[in-house]
Amino acid sequence: MTGPWRPVAVPPLRPVPRESTPSIVAARIREAIASGDIPPGSQLGEVEYAAQLGVSRGPLREGLQRLTQEGLLVAHRNRGLFVVEMTDERVRDLYLARAAVERAAGDRIHQTDPDQASQALLEVVEDMADAAASGDVRDVSTADIRFHQVLVDQAHSPQLSRFHATLLTETRMCIHLLEPTYAVDEERVGEHREIARAFARGGARRTDALLVRHMRDAMHRLTGSPRGSLGPPVAGAQPS
Image 1 (spheres, rainbow, N blue to C red):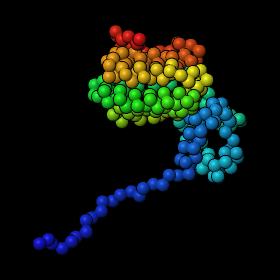
Image 2: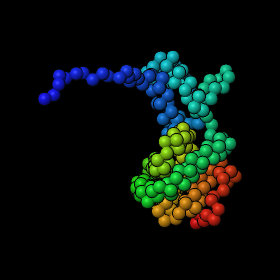
Image 3: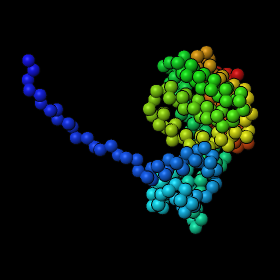
Image 4: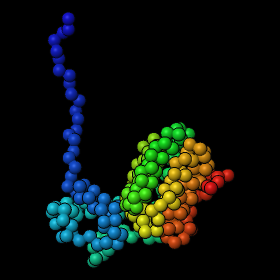
């Protein structure tokens, strides 16, 4: 026979915060910047954006301040706020950071479950191939971005995933800028398929070399120069 029911004391918990208007504003504008709908160098007028988003200028300013702190917007004295320009120097620095994160993720994957990672990446490549076959360059770019997200996530490192997330908006800006230089064909798909297969067949050195070559190729397309210190591939690696 059980005793009388007694209520269980509820531990003190903080209320779940609702997403603030400035957060929503920042998210909407961040997405528009990442997708290329607001191109690099564009000026953001408070009156126009407040009206378009249906918010007052106070929350808009707070949202824009957050994007300024993230480095996506830059304030020019007496001129206003502008989307950051993807200069050659900025692109090289971005790809330096991306290479550090993705190469570390690749090394970690080879220590854990490279076959699973290879399969997950090949599934993304198939989506990319389907988009390429239909001539949809925007869907190819979306799959390109997802490929690199999956790669880092397959390392199962919260820190690497967090670092990678901070680079995502500028990465998307770069990939959309690359669209005119990419033929929507097997060339772009093939680069990613080769990296995906290397996890299962090529070993850590080959995978690392392919990642470095892939990053340098993108950086070359964006800057017109292969110059850039992404770090040397692992000794003995053969990219092709």
